[in-house]
Length: 424
Image 1: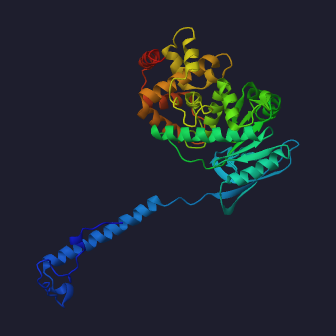
Image 2 (image 1 turned 45 degrees about the vertical axis):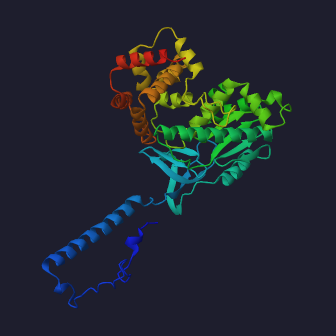
Image 3 (image 1 turned 120 degrees about the vertical axis):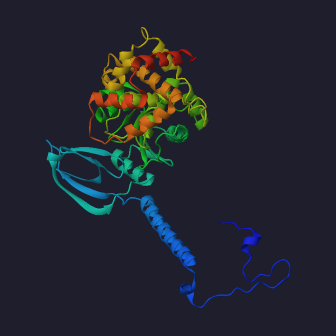
């Protein structure tokens, strides 16, 4: 609402404060033709300004208009081996000469060889992501009667253990989302509310988790207490307090049991951060995401002790386990080690070099967030806009990093060492 002063609201027919009748204005019946040339020019100028303002409003409306919703594509995929013919529906996320990336309404991605696609057509139907209710029904269909589903605002948690633990996991996930949102916005990093309802699977115990992980992502999944499956768009974990089952009767007691397992909780937070980063704009699934950034960002949140407090205050602080791992290495990383870290993913992906590369990725991320936040935000924005299915060369990765932070790795190495030397 626009406010006006009392004086401005008085009309031409109101009586002035001195009591005299209002002065009668004289109007010409000749209209614009009877105006002076100066007055006519003023009116023409005002008309031009009004027309320009109207056009500006139209252009702004066009700029601010929401893009037309993507249309559903239906693809028929030829069978491979013993698999039957598949008929898939979803939104095209990316397309190359050889591949098609399709996402369904539950956020699941399918990477298709275009030679296997028998037919592809647009249905004309607008693509609409599933709600948490719809996702819950899909999880019930997928996992069957052995699983129950607990829903929160953003998550659908399918579980085969106790309802109390699943409800506690839902609480912790929502806490983590809130912490993540606040932190990303404070750092001016890309953030948008998740487009898809987020699936989570909680297995009853370690044995059930290992068996599920082996079939879901292979042996690497069973080597941890939880993991994020990018294709499924879901986090998978198991009931950490399974050995204490029956001893906790309230959520507070479950939280206390989890607080006694800080390493496992930090792993859970790490994987939950991956899920959030890939669903809120920090990273794009199946894109050329630098692994040091993906893992460094997840490690940055590991000390968010969501099991102890609904508003953890240590987020963004020193991750002491990672700092100790970093300091426990034989000597400080040479400048070339930092160059190799950002140039490609080999050191992080290799089983032998990974244990040293992971704390180094945390150290680089922690330093950049704390000491060079503007450059870090610009770099993340650039990486988030990388298209899916296209893999950049190592030299392109290096150039992206140097564009944001410079090419002097000797100076960068000294700055990181000095900064980490001040941390306790």
